[in-house]
Length: 413
Ligand code: SAM
Ligand code: TMP
Image (cartoon, rainbow, N blue to C red):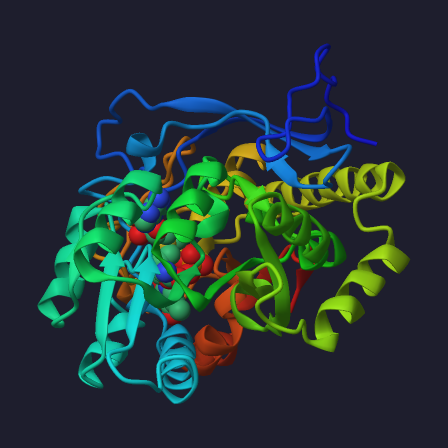
């Protein structure tokens, strides 16, 4: 059971308007991707509380952070920072090119194209495309790769505008972006306006089933407004005139699902949809007792991690963290991890280096600082990139160093 008080008044579901039930309170949190400079400027904080809809089962945040505070000129997340993700998006583009886009004058639209990691492949193949990307610096990187980018948020008005000037899209795709958008009615109206009659709306986001299974509570932060399941996505699709016609599990980012939606009745749903819905029902994924158990597992991880790091500090061990991920803002702020417990975080992103972690003010240093000299322990904040990181940091273990992980539970190896 969570040790936080439940709100007196339940909030309404952002999708269907029914009552929600709160099951987790991760406390006051800063923006997960706002890395202050030294000395720290005033930071924005909000309440990170999570609720599930009693009708459509959509898992969602209780408080919405205004979008301009999160996605702006200095948004520091660059999708191409991981070799595994570059490969993932190259494969995704190849599948679209061989499938839905293999037709005359095909048109692909991506919501949240970031630095163009996916669309640059579509562009190179000579296929007509457009990315929506409101965060200017990442959008400029995409433009530098020849990607056509519109610097707006995708919503009803901007999507309808593209339809008027460029015609219908065969594919509308969003990776790690749809769950960032609370105003879903406007998004679906936009998709309805822009999508061709036989087109597909494809999106992939962290799967709440994996979050519960792995207790990966760090998938919950300001930008991740929704934590989707097949059940909640199917209900959302139906509400807005679409149908869930395919699902595919993806191993990236700690476990995601790629959902394919089409206009209601336009395509035959794949058997995988019912299979996943059945699995979710058997697991009772969003049943109150399951959510309460999840909340209890989360606070157990906090207690274990704090106890371990406090002991290591008292023993005089050196501890640094690896990867200044947005996810780690939740962990560090919820567990109270400051520079007294973690000396610095190393990260390959220049826009994060020389800055401080949101809320907890741990210095962020370049990746090279990790081996200069190696610490005794490294807290793996970027656990979703573990294979890629382990493959290039073999010297750390060889030097006698130990990795600390907290997903699915705290362990040292
Ligand atoms: N698709 C990339 C990936 O999977 O790595 C980027 C994901 S990043 C976490 C989310 C991106 O969505 C950011 O670049 C942000 O600026 C953008 N974004 C947020 N809201 C948006 C909206 N309504 N329309 C278009 N892009 C949006
Ligand atoms: P993500 O989990 O949201 O993809 O963020 C990963 C963060 O970790 C990002 O700031 C880049 C950083 N990173 C490294 O520092 N080294 C690495 O090898 C990888 C893959 C990521």
